[in-house]
Length: 453
Image (cartoon, rainbow, N blue to C red):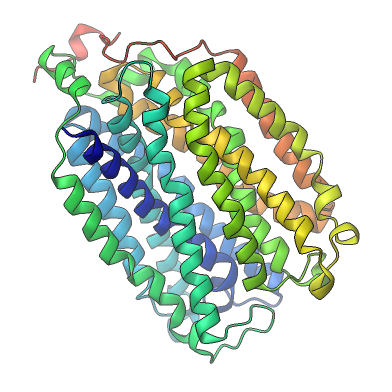
């Protein structure tokens, strides 16, 4: 199988999946509180919208078990197609949903169901793409190969938020004074969701042409497949599940603070203790910062191959921990300023530092998590660790951060991030180095649990 096809298939799939995911994340801040969650005050509507944002993270572990089962039994290729279609169809349907003002409480209920399906698809997508890259990589270059699916995150973010930015400019939407009868809130917000259909079709076309990874094919030939991958991974690799979950914790918390919560804090009303920056102004800053995320992702892979996963991630996680204690200096209204007086240059520096750290920590995760598990439970194990971490580090992060700001001030959001980084450091110290581990290994699963090809 040509290397270029592997790279494109792993990259295009995760780019589409993350595009779908971030389209919802952006709308959860700027659209859904107005159209699906009317409340007596803006803060209540925002918190309700962020709660449904978190529904996907509950679904993701379910998706990791379902798609992990088929990925370890049927193979990586077929499972990757299923996860992509699940995510894509749910995203398109969100773009067709009626609002609260049209069908009442059915609207947020249907939105939550579609969000659950988005999470279900993403729960199986990442691990399959990571395995496609790692199980076909050259010796000594596994982290560099594994970073390609990780690039899907910044690419998906750029497309999703860039799309929203262009629409708000074209349609004259002002988040500080939204008009319910304006073009953007009437139908414009639906376009990014509906456009997902086109790029999902592209992703399906690319993945249909894939071949099975040689590592998985050899495991099947040796009769190493197991009847129940979930049971096998819990029996043989439960320590690795815990380690992988907490290794991802700081990464998840950092990213969803910088892509979801920070948007609500930046554009939120000043009377609620937030900054009151214009939506379009802030989105431009965010899009600039995400370029640093994209640039640091391949750097992460190269450094992890050179120095090892464990020492590299320990250094980066320690920097994230220290960065958490700078939040008040950067973001406090008395420092940053509010509304038209906000210091956008200071905000850009803050975002760039955070996204640089994000690229460094995220780029290597698609190498270290698969390396923790044997071939016949690798899809299930890496997917469960990755997605259970999403509950602890991503699902609740925007909600907790919004609550901390309202209750104690923005400095405590940084303390929260530092606490998650500390837990990741403890997990890293308890994990053995995986750089030189052979992925083509026999499972520890008992003979009775295996099935022949």
